[in-house]
Length: 271
Image 1 (spheres, helix red, strand yellow):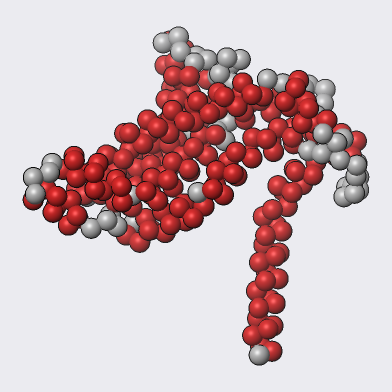
Image 2: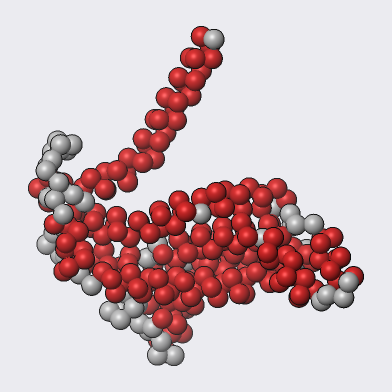
């Protein structure tokens, strides 16, 4: 009994230490968003302070934050939607016909650093007069979302027995109908996982938006720059903007957490 009690105490203590290390940056950012500039930059750090909402007023009243929010939502939603339309059939084909070379080719786009695609994208979109357009951002963000969809769903489709669609095909259904009517309804956790992760990566993307967007299509990660000037950095505004940007991603992850865990777990069985 004593050994079990000690082991439980040690276990929960280690969990608490790991959680503190992981959550500390977020908790520091959250607390700093309610501090004044002097409180943030004071040394030693002030853990007890009078909270203020001035930083959030700057974000939502002085900055066009809702416009940036709408831009990020449009770019993320459309890029993920198009990636699902293209990626789900591709992942099914890779899974059922063992097209491993095609899978590796698609995943190379995810493994390569995004900056290697930045200059070609810039040249292409500038010559097509598509700079500062949703088209440019959506296509560039699909470079992030599409490989994630293919990677997750090709492994997930492998966990679904082939006999299900083969039985439907024996009864006269085409492979396309068996895919849409039988396989996809059984792939809910995998689709939710791919959608959630793809949207979060698109939502947090900074590099493509920094180069390809301007005032019209500026997204949320770029909006943080509004609080950075040559003379100083408004750390309170930066922290408040960062919290506002992270909040939708955190809420989305919490809502679909069990589906994401299930999708990744089942996809890892044969992947």
